[in-house]
Length: 349
Image (cartoon, rainbow, N blue to C red):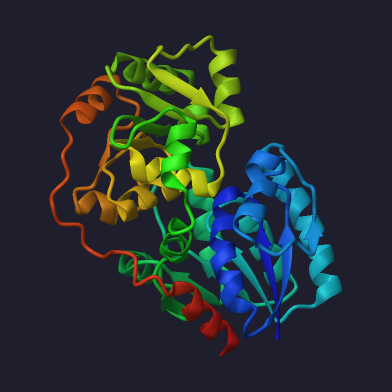
C-alpha cells in the first residue's frame, strides 16, 4: 500500500513526525512538502529536530495570497499524484496545504484521510475554518481527536469513515517532552520557570487588523511581568508597518523549534496565544492559557476551565492575566497518546 502524505506548515510537521513513524511500519509513505513554510526556522529545523524523513518532493510554493498559494499547490500536488498513483492521500489540520492536497486527490478519485478532522471554530471569516470544512466533506477517512469533533461532523451529516482516534499532538508531546532539555532552554533565554508569560501571535485575524494588533500590544505592555515572545516574521512585519511598539517587559526572539517551544510552554506561568495548537499544548502541559481570539476550535479546554477567550480586548486581556486561576482538575480530553498507531491501523485496513 502506498500513502502520499501532504505537509507544509510547522504544526503539520509535528503531527507527521509521529504518524509517519507508525505509518511506515504498515505502508510505503511518499512525503510531499508543499513549501508553505519554507525557511530554516519554520521548516528544515523541524525536520531535523523531530527526525522526520526528508520529503520525497519539495514543491517550493512559498508565500503568496491564499488563492495563488492554494492554486499553485493544487497544480503541483496533482502532478505528484499522477506520477506516484498512491492508494490514499493523507492530509493534516487546516492549512492551504491541507485543502490543496485533499482537492487534488479527490479530483483524481484517490481516497483522502484527514488527520484532525471535525474541528470547528464556527467562524467562517477564518481561512482555516473554510479549509477544515471543505476537507472534511471530501475525505473518506476522518481521524477525529475528540468526541466533540465527532459530534461536529455528525451535525453536518458526516458519519461515514469517521473515527475517534485521539489527538496525535498528544502522542508527539509525550514522545518529545522526554527529549526536551528544558532547563538548558530556559537558561539560554534568561528565563526562570514560572517567572514569565509566553506569547505567540501569528494568525491573519491578529496581524492583518491594526486595531486588534495594537490592543494586544498595549495589553502586554501594561503587564508588570516579563513576556517572552518568539515572533513569527509576519507579526514583526505587521508591527513595523503599523508603527506599533512593545513594552520593555516584552522580550522578542526569533521563532523557536518544537523542542524549545515545549520547554518554553512547560516553564511559563501562563501562555497567551492565537494558535490552535499552542492552546492544546498548554492544556497538555498543565499551563493556563489566554486565547487572543473570539472563538476556539478547542472548546473542551475552555469548558475544563484551563483556557479563557479574551479576543483582542485590552482590558480583558490585562485582567485575565492577573486573575486567572484554573481549577485543580484537568481531565484527559485528547486520548491516551496512541492516536498515530490507530490512524496507521485504520489506513492499513
